[in-house]
Image: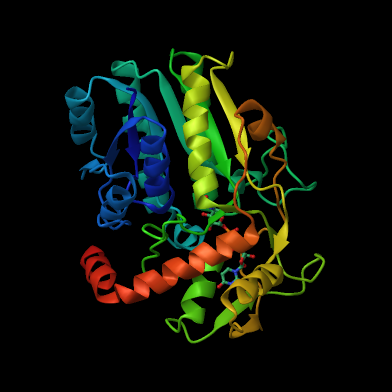
Length: 351
Ligand code: WQD
């Protein structure tokens, strides 16, 4: 059984990927310092899979502590690296914190990958590397443009670091560029747990609908899109998670001749903010309380994926549509409210 180290395993996409890996026969361990995640999410992973996942509560910016994990697990076949700060707005306010955390953790990890000769490495990248694309949909060959934030730069620099690393090391690497991951596992046992006021659209919608937020703002409706609001490619988090399992299998099966491959992980459908809200209102049966606000600095106007390479090369079949995304997100928000004291207590400990 191949042992996979998942960094950021207590996070949103990390926890969903743990589930998918276990369900597909992989042995998994997690490393997560829980600075931005709730360790209780692993209880949800256990309820779904029946497996108790070991988490090393280690900061990957500490080389010695990171190295010790590899000494204890010399049989690691592959790594999926999620652990990073990911708030666009926060990165603008705290650029050094973002460059230090996101790059030092990656460099420490790669030093260990090199020393312990880990065969496979999958990196959590992002469509933010495309900046504001001139032509959409974007393919993996669409040239990256200047990032819109320090966060976006850490993803672009991370890709370059890994690409150069893979040229002089036997480790085969894959860069997965996510579009907008949303929704929750169909079991409603795991989902997104934003810390503080959510910056992202779908948690802002569900927290407004459940009454945690008094009202939501649509950041601008005067863009050059079909209804004036920004256009994005929303993709269910469980579809994103399964793509990681397929990417690992692709490497293990030796189906690539390249040292470093890139895949777009998007649905291939462009959806505007106002269309996303309408889809939510349809599945929830609720009228959302929102107003049109000013544009948000740094927002990309319109982007969505050409995902054909991931579909054909990885055999990736997307299972969830926009209404499924909204339905599971809404059900998860209602679940968290039932356990409000429980999750709130834990999140309070994290702050
Ligand atoms: C989507 C649209 C907002 C909140 C995200 C992540 C980033 C990266 C890419 C992973 C925008 C609008 C939002 C609100 C709104 N993911 N919006 N009111 O900016 O595309 O970036 O995906 O690497 O880490 O942040 O996603 O959900 O923040 O915004 O109108 O209250 O929704 O203006 O047009 P974004 P988002």
